[in-house]
Length: 377
Image 1 (tube, rainbow, N blue to C red):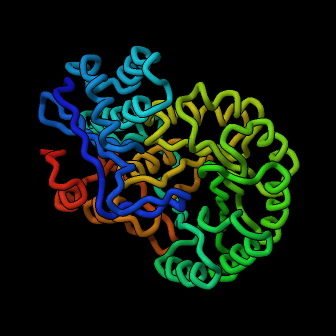
Image 2: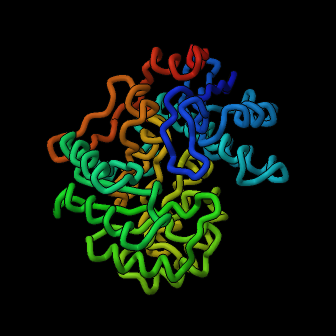
């Protein structure tokens, strides 16, 4: 089975807010779908956390390297693409795009072998996993109302982040967290994401430590991105002193970038994003590295249905990965997946056991959000 063609299509028209200071508009494109077409008619699905113009340019650069390659060897082909584009911007849009190709190749390998990707990664440790509903912070009353609505849908774990957090007083931050805890109840998991990778984040180590002490009062499961994304030494010290677990890593790409952070002890929980980091092949290696350094691996998943499907397969293959991120309210997750996603009565999400990613896209929804692009035909 050979790679015949790779197509991409950007998702637009319902792009959710990101909580960024330079806020996203619905018509902005930050997620691009990838479709790897093979000479025997199969199609593998991937997703890239990049604008479609950048992905299209990266595919043009990569085409001489992937055209005619085996569609059954994701790790070898992805590494070939990384090795031969090193000097063109390791870690940027080319790396992101290679990751989308890699996800699609794993999907194809699963289809060809009749196995779910998680089994090909070494075996399925679980058949279902708990999704945590991930939303932006709002004023306390509005946030509480939204969280109660999400809990009514069956979720039992929640992450709140970005928005006004860290932009006002410590009292305002605590009022937001208190409202969230009151809304979801004492039995639900609550995570807090400061969003310190936003432009011109104003706080440093001492703010993060004080805030972590406040979060401990509300039984917060982890404190995410509390520091600037390059402040590794501060992360190390914060992890040593904070009562709550510290998580991060969503902005890093490729395993080489994660190695010093994991070896230094910067995280309790590492959160690579499969649509940024270089795909399933890279994320698996990062997860192994995390295990070796005593760090939990919980994927970052503020992206698409394809990214969620990849995260579910990764979660099935790692014993300690008992949570996946679920961006609540995004059509790019809920609508483009044929049949949608359904929680069971315990708030768990089944991990597809079908071949590959186990995901079928709703073609009408894909056309709606890609401007009619011929991605799958």
